[in-house]
Image (cartoon, rainbow, N blue to C red):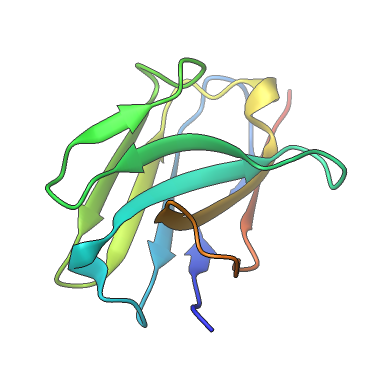
Length: 115
């Protein structure tokens, strides 16, 4: 079973920044596009936030374009999500996975944005 380990979440005020980290030690990292997803409440579907392809090209959903930056360190099998200008609507549990995604998910990391 593929494992993903997310970290770096926290509770911040609107306008603040956070950097999330994802470790994916078990996959052949260089072969996969990697992505960050988020789930704002247990009953909602996870939505994709950003993708980074194996060659390093990023792609962002409109609601984070210009605020978030995805990057990867293939030698360390790590994926990052730099989040700036955070908004209350960014509050969610953030997960990483491949794109297209595997069926297994990590624990995620909680990001809470509130005044």
